[in-house]
Length: 194
Image (cartoon, rainbow, N blue to C red; front, side, top):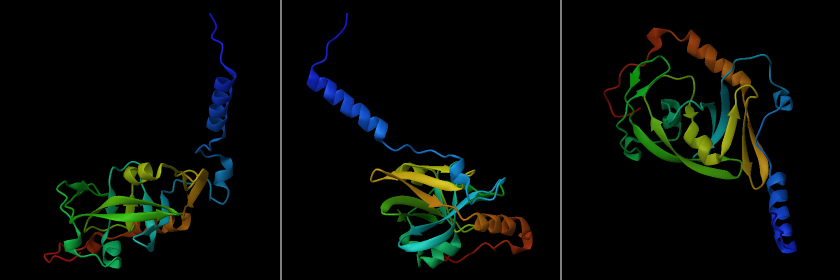
């Protein structure tokens, strides 16, 4: 048994189908690798506007469930302990050591004309990065990232927009992390400043 559609229903259905097909798709192709040193195994390091400031050395880590802020950025944004709210969970750093967070703070991240607020966990630990953005930021922006293509892509106002990597900075951060001596470990602070 077939169901006949009225002309108005056909037009509406065709219009919806056309809109679905015309909608931009997030994806990566070989064209996205132009300008990237290949082959590589670099992490994705970008510059983001956080709280109105251009912040370099931001690691995009889609494997992480929390955004992290390190002392350089905390100090650079002139934040104080009273700006933080409590955060009771422990974190594990890149070296596998447990880190007790100082607290958390909600800050805006601007990407192009899009602004999303994320909760940064503030830690007093060494990192070659100033911050880590993770799945909460990617999901709030409705973005996808690719370390192979060294980009973050997201939809905004019907267009696919990109955040381009800083591959040279990613390599500098890696060298800094590898060459770091254990004696350079920051001492445990007994005061309330980061």
